[in-house]
Length: 116
Length: 113
Image (tube, rainbow over all chains, first blue to last red; front, side):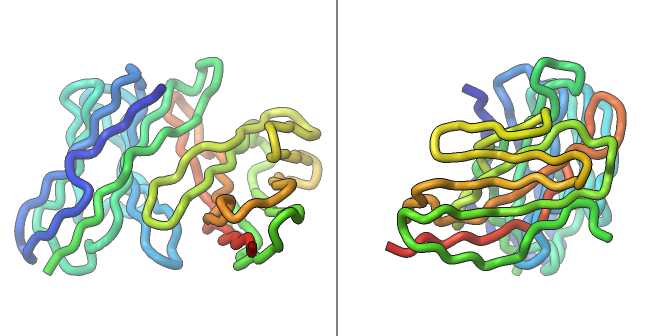
């Protein structure tokens, strides 16, 4: 079974703090994704990565950065947390699109971040 | 037009009935389609994917794809209260080796005992 884990289920931070959210997958997937999910707005893609040290902006990258130094690990960084970044953050991973079952994304349990 | 649209719901059905969830997409070139289920407070989990026109059945779930009309639907037969969740339709968009999944906004389903 694919397993995607996230470092924290709940996190409370203060405005201006630097926040690190970590995601690890154990299935040797090439692609990894960070989303945020807010009521009424659905899942929105922040960043994704298709290889080590490679990253692409998603729909809402402002205020975020990412790091992928190892294939299995994808980190989301909030350089200076703000209250409007309070949300549920979801990490996902998938195989390459030319694999037998392309594009299926497997999600981690999520991190509910509150910025005070 | 949104790239992936779902009937917004919420949808309520009695236990034992058929629940029908619909999704339309804008990209005629899309080849694969996914249905995820998300329980309240949990992360989305894949329940079905479909690539070919027609029906694909898995237990009580049937995915139906009509590429000419650009819609994909999910039927849940003999609905159970445990099926109460938000159902997300997802379609890959873009090119290259890491195509993004674009998700619909989801349909909240409640199965009434």
